[in-house]
Length: 181
Image (cartoon, rainbow, N blue to C red):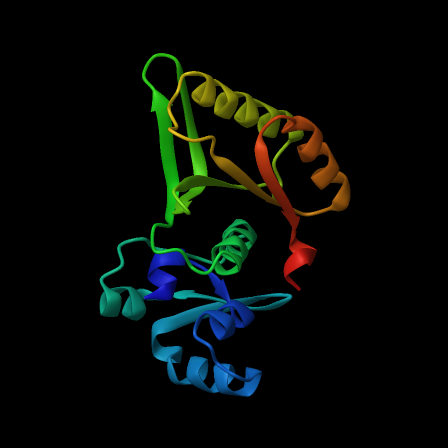
């Protein structure tokens, strides 16, 4: 079911989410689930549901080996770091019709505050700038009852600094992938 919800998970993410004490135990369980899973290597094994697995858990989305999987893995790092929130929703649209629309990588509520998750994997910084401006516009238009917290995950310290500069005045938290290893 974790793979149905999150699409792609690394072995270490599965191990943490399901409280599997050792890598050996995680690998043993994943080996038993082999008829339902496909995987590929990207630093470590990345798992996703194959046809039999999708049928078993009634998942509709067909996934394949793709470079875009890294985007999902980064997003899942945030999901795990924030305690696997039950309110988590992927790819959510926020809009004021005819004024502003933005699709967040994920949304969740924590302590009655909306958290907006953004993944900066291979995005051009100009696209990130545009997204930040659209979030500012949504805040300005009163879409949120409390100022949302914007959580970014990016690839390098340089990009973290650039995002920090872009997000001045917002309630923001910015991670790099290295924060989770």
